[in-house]
Length: 232
Ligand SMILES: *[C@@H]1O[C@H](CO)[C@@H](O)[C@H](O)[C@H]1NC(C)=O
Ligand SMILES: *[C@@H]1O[C@H](CO)[C@@H](O)[C@H](O)[C@H]1NC(C)=O
Ligand SMILES: *[C@@H]1O[C@H](CO)[C@@H](O)[C@H](O)[C@H]1NC(C)=O
Image (cartoon, rainbow, N blue to C red):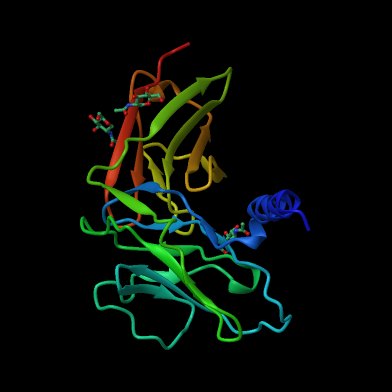
């Protein structure tokens, strides 16, 4: 074969491998996630590896690490590093190449960087050290955003915050009773919005008075927003 042709075939092959993401060892994780101290964070994670020649793969061991410390694993009996024991939960499913992890009781020192490692005894092991995730530990909770709509005979107040722990979302409390509903919405891969909506039929005594919404974050930190109900 001519050398030129040989080179171009090799080149095409390399391009092909790089384009099919299943053919590479990559982990899809955010590079940085902000999270409140004391609260929790869910680190979304999926990974790929080159297709093994043999079809039989039925054992996977997944580890989240910080340097050499093991922070989380899918193995139930594994002894985790003392610093992370009882604070992490492996939420992902290795059968579907999902390595999502939860870290709770976030400490100032939990900045990471963390990375995932897969071990497949029938195939290969790999540490995804090129795909690290850091936590930006926030000391103060973000105050909720509060808006109120007054119709003829109904007040609708909405109080919302964004956070990074869909597993244990913040709780809300209102200074006035009424019908309360709550819902969560995904804003991006790691950011969620949880909103509490209060509706009530106003009485004259409700006006020119504070209406407060308090958010209680996982771990106990609170933040508040307040508005004054105006007569319409
Ligand atoms: C991975 O697993 C988590 C936890 O079960 C789930 O919430 C998430 O949707 C999964 N991600 C994908 C891409 O399937
Ligand atoms: C209260 O909510 C309003 C409306 O979303 C927002 O503009 C304001 O900054 C919030 N107040 C505080 C103290 O965060
Ligand atoms: C609501 O918030 C205001 C202003 O921060 C405060 O003065 C008031 O005591 C609060 N009311 C209730 C019932 O918590």
